[in-house]
Amino acid sequence: MKLSNYQYELIAAYIRNELSGAALKEFESELASNELFRKELDFEQAITTTFHWDKVKETLKQAKTTHLLKEKSVKRVMAQDSLQRAKTSYYHKVQKRKWIVAILAAACVLLVGLLGLRTGLPAEVNEQMILIGVQLSPKESGDTKVSGRQSVIIKKLKDAEAAYNNNELEKTINYFNVLREKPYKYNSPEMSLYEGIILARQGDYLSSIKMLNELIDEKTEIENDVHWHLGWIHLKFNKKQDAKMHFEILSNTSDKYRNSAIKTLKKHFRSW
Image (cartoon, rainbow, N blue to C red; front, side):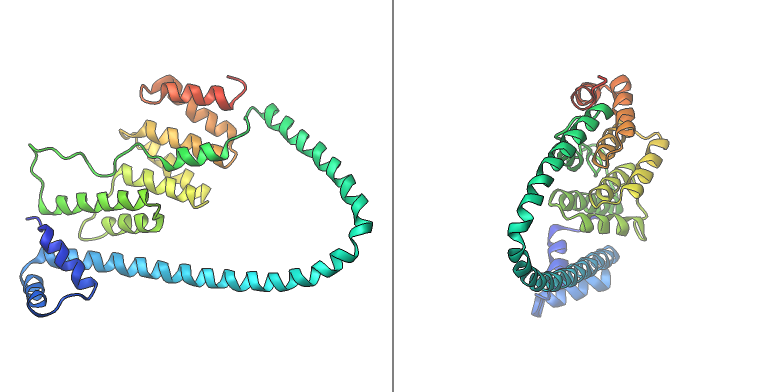
């Protein structure tokens, strides 16, 4: 049995503490008689609690950062006076350092070229990592009946995908964690792909690569999608040869990604 939109709205209103009178009595009646209604309430409360705790942690982090900035600002004012007095004698040293930096910058550009990776990557890498061409929830068919549990799972997967598209990465992970626990006990390759990309976007390169490589070993239907995103993740963290390997695999085996992989290899690797 599937909950109605009104029942979902009733749960949401209860969590926001907006129910009273007849509406509150109706909620309590549903809670006493409808097991699916109770499970949905437990689920939403778990999500809300986790999300609020994340907000608290973020607020504490911001407060700490603000304190540090104020402290640095005081030190900066104290240092400015000393710097001003030394400005004249420091001028010639600065000029000398400028041409040294210019030489080093030219050497870095040459080194990048010799290693086979072209410049201008960061914006493109981030764009390719963020865009995931894989749908989290399974495609619905009018000819296939789904159980109450399946319909709730599909709804939560859509909510997780919406959270990701809104750049709410921690909230997306929270949806996945809840779905993997009772009463749903649900997991999918698509969830692992999203989670691996989120880890990379958060800077946890090793965990991201480990998760996505394990997903490749499972030989799922989205194996080529995983190769594509692994290529861009390796580029983001300057693992050029690993990135090249994934793009070359796609150039030889994937109808979906072949042209894009070849274009990427030609653009970013001088050996192509």
